[in-house]
Amino acid sequence: MSLALTFLQQAPSPDQVKEQLEMLIHPIMRHGRDNISFLYSLDAFDWAIIIIYFTILALLAILGRKAMEGVGAVRAAATADVEFWKGPINALKAEHEWFKKEAQHLMELLTLPVLQLVASGFNFLVVVITGKPHFNLPFRSLDQVLHSTPIFHTGKTSTVEGGAS
Image 1 (cartoon, rainbow, N blue to C red):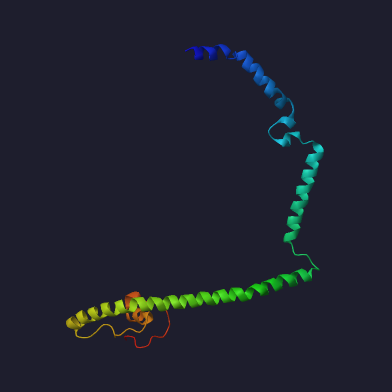
Image 2: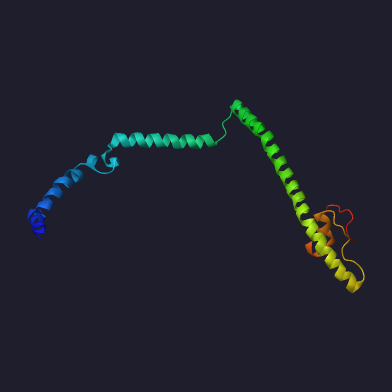
């Protein structure tokens, strides 16, 4: 209890707190250079330099977008850059096509055995009911499966060997 009374007796009065805050805040409010932002302390010369600098940058950006005449060396260098990148881009496209073909082949390897079993079971039921098979087995590729089944017809115009009529 005595500790609380000690703090209360030593606490400054509200007028003293107000005076101390005014002493701290008054220079900041009076001088712009003491403010939080340095922009308040820039004079007219500083503002003129900043405006000229950014105007020049904007003009250079606009002029840089327009084609300037008489600069054939620059265009030749740009064409050489394009030619330099054509080889790697074409190689990347070729690898992409190779991956697509390999993925198609892997899909055939994974799905054809399952499709053979399902098609043979379905053919057995169709032969029992109608007397003729629906599929010509064995399937050789996924394209043959897709072309022999009208439900899954994709509109591709590739040739199918040994498919159903």
